[in-house]
Image (tube, rainbow, N blue to C red; front, side):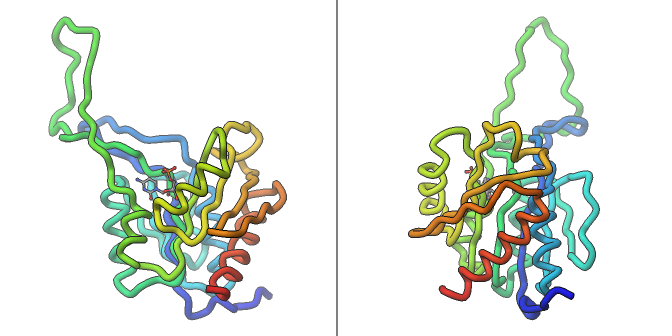
Length: 222
Ligand code: C5P
C-alpha cells in the first residue's frame, strides 16, 4: 500500500492541449497527448492528495479518484483553475500545452472559401498565460510549470521560471524524438531558483511518481 502522506492536500493540474475555435467546425490546437499531466494526477492521487485535473481534449480516461474538469479553450482553462482554487491549492502543476493565440473573433458561421484569392488571413490575439496569471494571483502555495525547449533548454527554462513566478520548472528537450510529446517515455531536468535535478529517462508514469516526490520534498523546505 502507498503511504497516504498527501492526504489533506489539494493539487490542481492542467493537462492536454487547448482547442481554440476558428468557426463552428474548425479549430487551432497542438499535438499534446496529455499523458504527462494525467500521470502526475494519478501519482499525486495515489499518495492521498485530492486532485483536480483541468484537461483539454485528450484520448485518456480520467485516473481513478481524480476530479477531472474538461475544457477546450485557454480562457476556459484559466476560469476552471481559478474556480478550483478559490481556496488556495497546495500545489499547481501546469502540464498543459496551452495554445499561445486564439481567434480575435470566432466566426459564428462556417467560413467559406469563396472569392478568387488563394490566400486566407486569420487575425489572432494572445491567450492569457494560465500559469503566470495564477502565480500572480497567489492561488497555490507551490507553482510548478513545464518548459518544452529545442535548444538552450536549461537557460530558457530558468528564465521562464523567473518570468512566470514559479517555484519549480520541469524542462525537457523536445528536439529529441525519443522523449516528450506523444511519447510514453520522458526525460526532464527540474529546476528551482538555485538547484537542479535530473531523474533518469523512464516511462511517464514512473517519472510522474518521482516528480511528485520531488515536489513534495521541495514543499517541505519552503
Ligand atoms: O511559455 P511556454 O508555453 O513555454 O511555458 C510553458 C509553461 O507555461 C507550461 O507550464 C504551460 O502549461 C504554461 N502555459 C500556460 N499558459 C499559456 C502558455 C503556457 O499556463 N498561455
